[in-house]
Length: 176
Ligand SMILES: Nc1ncnc2c1ncn2[C@@H]1O[C@H](COP(=O)(O)OP(=O)(O)O)[C@@H](O)[C@H]1O
Ligand SMILES: O=C(O)C1=C[C@@H](OP(=O)(O)O)[C@@H](O)[C@H](O)C1
Ligand SMILES: [Mg+2]
Figure (cartoon, rainbow, N blue to C red):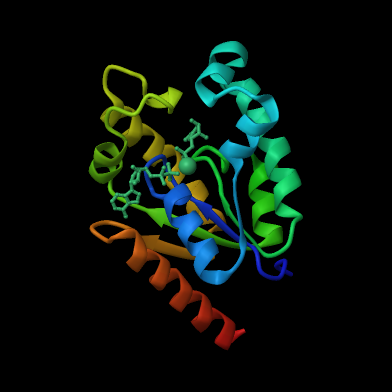
Protein backbone atom coordinates (compact mmCIF):
# COMPACT_ATOMS: atom_id res chain seq x y z
CA UNK A 1 0.00 0.00 0.00
CA UNK A 2 1.48 3.35 -1.11
CA UNK A 3 1.79 6.09 1.52
CA UNK A 4 -0.86 8.76 1.03
CA UNK A 5 0.30 11.85 -0.74
CA UNK A 6 3.97 11.17 -1.40
CA UNK A 7 5.48 11.67 -4.85
CA UNK A 8 9.07 10.60 -5.52
CA UNK A 9 10.89 11.77 -8.64
CA UNK A 10 13.60 9.55 -10.11
CA UNK A 11 15.73 9.78 -13.26
CA UNK A 12 19.19 10.65 -14.50
CA UNK A 13 21.15 13.83 -13.85
CA UNK A 14 19.54 16.64 -15.84
CA UNK A 15 16.13 14.97 -16.02
CA UNK A 16 14.69 17.90 -14.07
CA UNK A 17 13.88 16.16 -10.76
CA UNK A 18 14.93 19.11 -8.60
CA UNK A 19 13.37 21.78 -10.85
CA UNK A 20 10.12 19.96 -11.60
CA UNK A 21 9.84 18.71 -8.01
CA UNK A 22 9.93 22.18 -6.51
CA UNK A 23 7.22 23.47 -8.85
CA UNK A 24 5.08 20.34 -8.50
CA UNK A 25 5.17 20.59 -4.70
CA UNK A 26 3.92 24.20 -4.87
CA UNK A 27 1.19 23.32 -7.31
CA UNK A 28 -0.01 20.35 -5.20
CA UNK A 29 0.54 22.09 -1.87
CA UNK A 30 3.01 19.48 -0.67
CA UNK A 31 6.34 19.93 1.09
CA UNK A 32 9.38 19.76 -1.17
CA UNK A 33 12.53 17.83 -0.31
CA UNK A 34 15.62 17.13 -2.37
CA UNK A 35 17.76 14.28 -1.01
CA UNK A 36 20.95 16.01 -2.24
CA UNK A 37 20.02 19.22 -0.43
CA UNK A 38 19.25 17.26 2.74
CA UNK A 39 22.67 15.60 2.61
CA UNK A 40 24.34 19.00 2.10
CA UNK A 41 22.31 20.54 4.92
CA UNK A 42 23.19 17.74 7.34
CA UNK A 43 26.88 17.59 6.52
CA UNK A 44 27.37 21.31 5.95
CA UNK A 45 29.43 20.63 2.82
CA UNK A 46 28.60 20.25 -0.85
CA UNK A 47 28.29 17.02 -2.81
CA UNK A 48 31.57 17.37 -4.74
CA UNK A 49 33.44 17.61 -1.41
CA UNK A 50 31.64 14.53 -0.03
CA UNK A 51 32.71 12.59 -3.14
CA UNK A 52 36.27 13.89 -2.73
CA UNK A 53 36.52 12.99 0.96
CA UNK A 54 34.45 9.80 1.14
CA UNK A 55 34.22 8.56 -2.44
CA UNK A 56 31.02 7.56 -4.20
CA UNK A 57 30.42 4.74 -1.68
CA UNK A 58 30.51 7.22 1.22
CA UNK A 59 28.03 9.42 -0.60
CA UNK A 60 25.73 6.43 -1.28
CA UNK A 61 25.61 5.61 2.44
CA UNK A 62 24.55 9.15 3.24
CA UNK A 63 22.03 9.07 0.40
CA UNK A 64 20.44 5.83 1.68
CA UNK A 65 20.18 7.28 5.16
CA UNK A 66 18.55 10.46 3.80
CA UNK A 67 16.09 8.51 1.67
CA UNK A 68 15.13 6.22 4.57
CA UNK A 69 14.35 9.28 6.68
CA UNK A 70 12.47 11.18 3.98
CA UNK A 71 10.21 8.46 2.55
CA UNK A 72 8.39 8.00 5.85
CA UNK A 73 7.21 11.61 5.86
CA UNK A 74 3.72 12.39 4.57
CA UNK A 75 2.48 14.61 1.78
CA UNK A 76 5.87 15.36 0.27
CA UNK A 77 7.43 15.69 -3.16
CA UNK A 78 10.94 14.24 -3.06
CA UNK A 79 13.52 14.86 -5.77
CA UNK A 80 16.04 12.05 -5.45
CA UNK A 81 19.59 12.03 -6.82
CA UNK A 82 20.10 10.18 -10.10
CA UNK A 83 21.86 7.27 -8.39
CA UNK A 84 19.24 6.72 -5.72
CA UNK A 85 17.93 3.63 -7.49
CA UNK A 86 21.27 1.80 -7.44
CA UNK A 87 20.69 0.16 -4.06
CA UNK A 88 17.87 -2.32 -3.65
CA UNK A 89 17.07 -0.94 -0.19
CA UNK A 90 16.42 2.50 -1.72
CA UNK A 91 14.27 1.07 -4.51
CA UNK A 92 12.23 -0.84 -1.92
CA UNK A 93 11.85 2.25 0.29
CA UNK A 94 10.74 4.49 -2.60
CA UNK A 95 8.39 1.89 -3.99
CA UNK A 96 6.75 1.22 -0.65
CA UNK A 97 6.10 4.78 0.45
CA UNK A 98 4.86 6.80 -2.49
CA UNK A 99 4.07 7.19 -6.17
CA UNK A 100 7.31 6.95 -8.12
CA UNK A 101 7.59 9.17 -11.20
CA UNK A 102 10.43 8.54 -13.65
CA UNK A 103 11.43 11.68 -15.53
CA UNK A 104 13.03 10.64 -18.79
CA UNK A 105 15.04 12.50 -21.42
CA UNK A 106 17.39 11.54 -24.23
CA UNK A 107 21.11 11.37 -23.50
CA UNK A 108 21.63 14.42 -25.73
CA UNK A 109 19.09 16.46 -23.78
CA UNK A 110 20.57 15.38 -20.45
CA UNK A 111 23.98 16.35 -21.73
CA UNK A 112 22.84 19.78 -22.92
CA UNK A 113 21.07 20.47 -19.64
CA UNK A 114 24.10 19.54 -17.51
CA UNK A 115 26.85 20.94 -19.75
CA UNK A 116 29.43 22.96 -17.86
CA UNK A 117 27.94 21.96 -14.49
CA UNK A 118 30.60 21.59 -11.78
CA UNK A 119 28.37 20.20 -9.02
CA UNK A 120 27.90 16.71 -10.39
CA UNK A 121 31.11 14.75 -9.68
CA UNK A 122 30.17 11.86 -11.99
CA UNK A 123 30.10 14.21 -14.97
CA UNK A 124 33.53 15.75 -14.38
CA UNK A 125 35.14 13.58 -17.03
CA UNK A 126 36.66 14.17 -20.45
CA UNK A 127 33.54 12.86 -22.10
CA UNK A 128 30.43 13.55 -20.00
CA UNK A 129 28.13 12.63 -22.87
CA UNK A 130 29.61 9.14 -23.00
CA UNK A 131 29.34 8.88 -19.20
CA UNK A 132 25.66 9.82 -19.39
CA UNK A 133 25.13 7.18 -22.08
CA UNK A 134 26.71 4.51 -19.85
CA UNK A 135 24.68 5.61 -16.83
CA UNK A 136 21.51 5.62 -18.96
CA UNK A 137 22.12 2.01 -20.05
CA UNK A 138 22.86 0.88 -16.49
CA UNK A 139 20.06 2.74 -14.77
CA UNK A 140 17.11 2.90 -17.17
CA UNK A 141 16.04 -0.67 -16.21
CA UNK A 142 16.27 0.24 -12.51
CA UNK A 143 14.17 3.38 -12.94
CA UNK A 144 11.59 1.40 -14.90
CA UNK A 145 11.54 -1.35 -12.28
CA UNK A 146 9.99 0.95 -9.67
CA UNK A 147 8.26 3.62 -11.81
CA UNK A 148 4.51 4.02 -11.38
CA UNK A 149 4.60 6.71 -14.06
CA UNK A 150 7.12 7.44 -16.85
CA UNK A 151 7.16 11.00 -18.18
CA UNK A 152 9.13 11.96 -21.28
CA UNK A 153 10.43 15.46 -20.57
CA UNK A 154 12.05 15.93 -23.99
CA UNK A 155 11.26 19.31 -25.54
CA UNK A 156 8.75 20.10 -22.81
CA UNK A 157 8.92 23.15 -20.56
CA UNK A 158 8.92 22.46 -16.83
CA UNK A 159 5.40 23.89 -16.39
CA UNK A 160 3.88 21.46 -18.87
CA UNK A 161 5.72 18.53 -17.23
CA UNK A 162 4.11 19.52 -13.92
CA UNK A 163 0.67 19.69 -15.56
CA UNK A 164 1.22 16.32 -17.22
CA UNK A 165 2.20 14.66 -13.93
CA UNK A 166 -0.84 16.15 -12.20
CA UNK A 167 -3.16 14.89 -14.92
CA UNK A 168 -1.67 11.38 -14.84
CA UNK A 169 -2.00 11.28 -11.05
CA UNK A 170 -5.68 12.29 -11.31
CA UNK A 171 -6.36 9.50 -13.81
CA UNK A 172 -4.55 7.03 -11.53
CA UNK A 173 -6.62 8.21 -8.58
CA UNK A 174 -9.85 7.86 -10.54
CA UNK A 175 -8.92 4.30 -11.51
CA UNK A 176 -7.82 3.28 -8.01
N1 LIG B 1 12.16 20.25 -19.13
C1 LIG B 1 13.28 20.95 -19.14
N2 LIG B 1 13.64 21.62 -20.25
C2 LIG B 1 14.78 22.34 -20.29
N3 LIG B 1 15.66 22.45 -19.26
C3 LIG B 1 15.35 21.79 -18.14
C4 LIG B 1 14.18 21.00 -18.01
N4 LIG B 1 14.15 20.46 -16.76
C5 LIG B 1 15.27 20.87 -16.14
N5 LIG B 1 15.99 21.69 -16.95
C6 LIG B 1 17.28 22.32 -16.64
O1 LIG B 1 18.24 21.28 -16.56
C7 LIG B 1 19.16 21.52 -15.51
C8 LIG B 1 19.13 20.33 -14.56
O2 LIG B 1 17.87 20.30 -13.89
P1 LIG B 1 17.71 19.66 -12.45
O3 LIG B 1 16.33 19.96 -11.99
O4 LIG B 1 18.83 20.06 -11.58
O5 LIG B 1 17.84 18.11 -12.80
P2 LIG B 1 18.08 16.87 -11.85
O6 LIG B 1 17.74 17.27 -10.45
O7 LIG B 1 17.18 15.80 -12.40
O8 LIG B 1 19.53 16.53 -12.04
C9 LIG B 1 18.73 22.84 -14.86
O9 LIG B 1 19.51 23.87 -15.42
C10 LIG B 1 17.29 22.99 -15.26
O10 LIG B 1 16.90 24.33 -15.35
O1 LIG C 1 23.43 10.31 -10.79
C1 LIG C 1 24.10 10.33 -9.73
O2 LIG C 1 24.72 9.34 -9.31
C2 LIG C 1 24.15 11.60 -8.94
C3 LIG C 1 23.20 12.57 -9.21
C4 LIG C 1 23.19 13.86 -8.50
O3 LIG C 1 21.85 14.35 -8.37
P1 LIG C 1 20.96 14.87 -9.64
O4 LIG C 1 20.42 13.65 -10.33
O5 LIG C 1 19.89 15.69 -9.02
O6 LIG C 1 21.87 15.66 -10.52
C5 LIG C 1 23.82 13.72 -7.11
O7 LIG C 1 23.01 12.92 -6.28
C6 LIG C 1 25.19 13.12 -7.22
O8 LIG C 1 26.02 14.00 -7.94
C7 LIG C 1 25.17 11.74 -7.89
MG1 LIG D 1 18.67 17.23 -8.58
